[in-house]
Structure formats: structure tokens, C-alpha cells
Image (cartoon, rainbow, N blue to C red; front, side, top):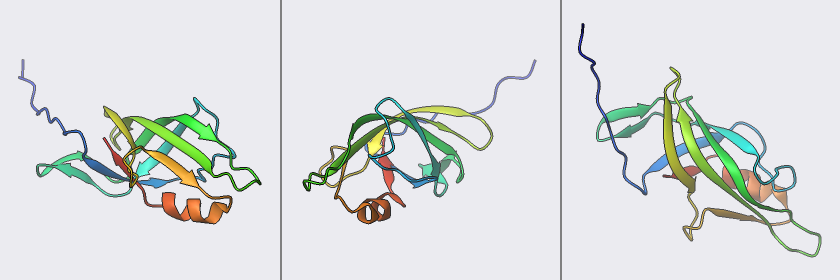
Length: 127
């Protein structure tokens, strides 16, 4: 019997994973508890080891959603990321949110969706 080959890598909290949207992300169309998928925008390495290749799926769940209103109240959206599924099918559990300036992971958009769309096109997940 051949011994198993491979290695275990722990990626520390605060590591950034570059993701790209595959569809519009909007507080107007998403529901709390809804699953959302993103794509890894480039290969993700840690300590010179490939963790997940570009094109891997990054999945999460909408945890906060509040629609923008006409009274100039901004929409709010937060997604908790739970796993990466690599291009070869390996499932990697993660615990992450979208990296925001204040560290909350809460996206706050204006009533103009164009600004929010531009922001989330090339976002990062802190895990």
C-alpha cells in the first residue's frame, strides 16, 4: 500500500483572497440567507504553495441585506464566505468577509448602483 502524499497548509486570519463577481451583486436583488458564488480572480498562494487556482469558486451566504431607499438611505450588504471549491473539486473551508476600509465587511452603497457595481468588480475576501 502506498503512503499518502501531500501537505497541510493553514492560512492565517487576515489573508486576502482576490475574487471577481460573476453576476450583479445588489442589495435590491439578494435575500438574506441566499448563497452567492464568486470566482478566484488569480491563483492564490500562501508561503509559495498554491492553495487554489484562478477560476476556483468562492461561495458565501448573504448575512445582511438592506435595500437602498429613495430618501437617500444607502443600501447595505454583507456576505460571509464559507468555502473555496478548487478547479479540481477540492473543497476548502474558509471564514471570510469582503475586505472593507473599516474592517466590518459591510458594503454600503449609494442610491446610484453604478458606484457599488464598480466597487465589487474586483474585491477581495479577508479570511
